[in-house]
Image (cartoon, rainbow, N blue to C red; front, side):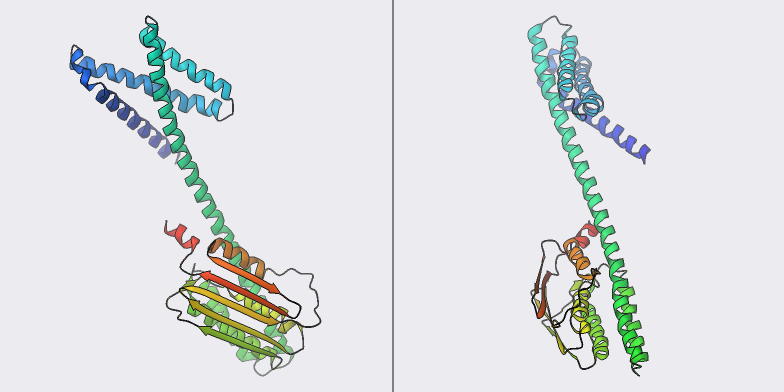
Length: 338
């Protein structure tokens, strides 16, 4: 990698020298007849190109990294002006001061142009490196969040099966099989960046059926889908935390009669999710802070920045979540394609 980078630097500087030499030759082309031979004309311009590139190289590889980047600005300015003056002086051997001053400003202009190109290229490299670092960090965080969502859902589902087993329900074996199907989808979807929205909603519906059986008749669950799903895709396991939250902090936390209303609407490729659940009159405050909603907030910010709206309305007797996502936008998908 180091050899490849060094080779790239060498080739880049050779190319810059050739470019400067060509520009010098073209700029003095009209005066070529004033030289004794074509050889002397080309040699004269090559010398100027060497002076220019010599100043640029000294700045790029010595003055900038050892003085300017270390914020030693005054010393950098002295060295820059001094080196340009010395080159202009030795070029004329100090015999003609008007020509020395003319060459000084000429070399100052060309060196400044070279420095501007250097800083522009370095800024582009830094921006690309920062973008790659941000992309890597975003993907690492998303993988971390996804790994947290999977066991979180599993624990909640196992708690549901455990409650039914304690009631010695004859439906327990069937529910264990249903849970295995849910887990199969979960494991398969966790390997993908996106899944079909239709599959994700079917997963939620099956989860609600499992919870309905466990909660028996003390919870009324409504799940309504409106609009054409088309071939819309969504990040896997992104919506389930909202559903789990409604079950856990609504019907599951009380023996009172409760309700969970979930509606999904698709309008112009935008998903609108509304989850409305009743809250028990007597709330037991848990000391453990749930990871579900916190993780899904972070995932939304990473996957759909500036293309989602999440509103949470926490009232005394009800808890409502309104979420809108533009499913045509996905930053993760863009960065991976790039």
